[in-house]
Length: 97
Image (cartoon, rainbow, N blue to C red):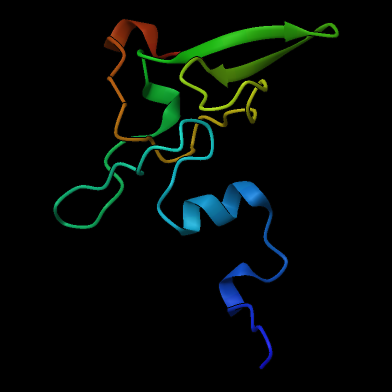
């Protein structure tokens, strides 16, 4: 018996693999999906958990709801949001994350 890895998993990073499985890589919560199957929100618009962290002189965007003791992955503004997503006020969105 041989173990076969399906095509979408081959050569994919751990962050993308989690998204492929419908799990957010920072919070380990399910990815937020609308009833029509579309992606209704992105991490860049989250007011609940997004934080800016300065490390070694560079600013990184992180998620305060990270599920591990480690710092968690850098969050990109266009990452799909998790079910813990809370929309930011419209005035806070330009130039953030």
